[in-house]
Image (cartoon, rainbow, N blue to C red; front, top):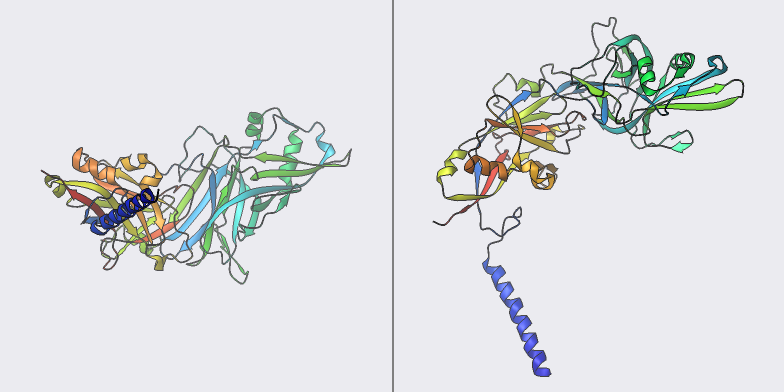
Length: 448
């Protein structure tokens, strides 16, 4: 027994020594690789330039945006939204309108995120639409619906994304509360009967929530107003913000609080914004000679590259000299595009969680990059805080360029989900002297 024990022990020790020796002799694989290839890394030259979107679809998205901010790097961005509330019951009836009294009407909007420094409040105004809005129509960032020429509600606020208010006796998600005019509720009750949701939508077309650009409240709570509606008042550089709201959250709704005189009963009725509700975001950007937008008309001789959500500025990349690899006997194990962030210009402006990418042909048509189809874990595009950069895996794309004869013009890099957020980022371009953007190819030499 003792001999068998020692034999087994020496065998295990021998295996461990062999594994250790192999590890000592093997060159460690690059950290991004799942297989231990002995790869050589080369960089492909890049050429960057900027453009803006002509049309961005913004309909049927979950998050609605409203506000105005003056970004010292990107200029002024403004957002409004249009939405059609629905009945929460099959029908609604007030058989004796004179027996009801409206106490208040409130628009509640569930917070999703906020972009920009919250140093001073901004004012949001609510208008009633005069024309229909349709769920099966496509609306763009420039689309607008006519509104009635008077306010039905307004609020000046600083967003609080942590406070959970109690509404109808229940603790809710953080909400913005916008008081609406009681006359809206009185008009609803006086109408008396809504036999269906279509009947309701024919009566009430929807709402528009937009920032007030004709008044400005400073840090001392002093109000400055435009003398004429022809000239907007923008926040000073570095002030203002845009808030996104989760409209399809069940806490986002219009609640009418009322009483029945004959019984003394207090009651509420809610109008909500389900997924089937028509809605879209409206964006407006005023570059005002900003640093970012100057790159559109001036040759890029700085070390910065700019990407903005909404219909703002985005980045184009051309890969240079890639065709030289076609004649080489190489296999590309990994193609990694690294876009370093210039965090000295981030300030209090939230970075996008993820960037995305498309390849563009010579006619300007965008196509999904093949690596995206492998899933976001493979494709990536997220911000890596350890290296302060966004990273993309575009190995499939490079293989198609080299081996499948893919002919395209360039790559376009955008903010992922740009129709529902107001983020932006400043990157180091390929001319940065210390930490430039670069495409790294990890290649292996094929045997003849």
